[in-house]
Length: 477
Ligand code: 5AD
Image (cartoon, rainbow, N blue to C red; front, top):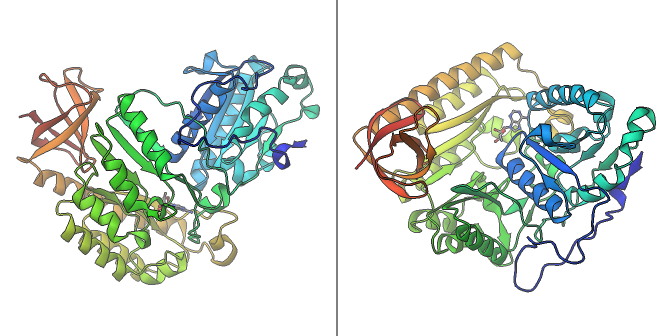
């Protein structure tokens, strides 16, 4: 088995003086031995969606083509997630299914990319020996080389034992893909990765081990990217990073970036995800409070309402500090929409510690929440040092309790919005009703309303007439 990871065969190109990305093929673009038709399938978070766009950029820059239907593909790349065990199980099942396809189409190349590839490494080949390529998030630059090296795969497939899968698993603390132009689907909202990796080391979390150390992209480049996105017709940009607000570029911090992006002409809205509570600076709050383009919507992962649990998680803030931050945000930014992530059943979580999480959710009244049972991940600090000792049934009961609580709160908050007029960025036709559009409010609430004379991409005022727990329904006024 080749380990190409030690030799990045495909050199990085330096960034030009004026920051920009290489979206066009240039004369020195290496030509592939075989131009491939590649289908990319994405699991997991928004960062993975953004990485898939990056992979599409790298592949097309190198003479390959991406396709939107798997039946047209001779390469399938599955971009995977490792955050919880069920994310990995889902992908394993999917790869098994792809092997059926490979039996019918023996020359099909199957690649596993992303966090799960980095997590399971060559062990993936034990579970799925028919996989041709295993590549982590810092190795996508090697995709063209990998595909070229696999062009002998047709004969090799006849004898799977002799096959030579390509492994690209080196984490590279300098890789930021700053020179690569991602290929995005046209639309209203574009996701822009501003930072890769994570330095936080929360004990439950696999991310630092599969995405490596934190690195930020240059501010000038990002502002130029946003200008280009606006030229392409995007109205909203979502800035992405694992701890997005620890962004820094020399003397500029995340607040500076928000202000700079907020000033880009023609951009309606900018959001970001996910910030870390310990990195919520005054300047970030200033930008949210004062830049009309920056949405008044914050996804602020709490994880637990118990300081003792937060300590075991190494979240670096106490429950009290988090409450103080929320109070400050609400004072500075009235009507701010807040959402969060919660983990129940983390190592040693007692009934009382869980009750504190429940109480905190009841007190803060988030607009919405993503809630999870703790899933122990091999390689994390918790896996090494803290037992996964809360019984599965208890995790399940606790999860059910907070889901019920949150559903009630979300429904109540929406009911309170009846009669209000909200600004909605029109995104597209409602799936259920061709006479209606759907869009999001500044606070990221899905809103559905009759089209009237509105157009996709514009901001309209909608009066809310009725609601469900997750949707506002109204009329343009
Ligand atoms: N188990 C359960 N949930 C987890 N998350 C991260 N790691 C784990 C884990 N091991 C959740 C956190 C994080 C979100 C993206 O996923 O709540 O904020």
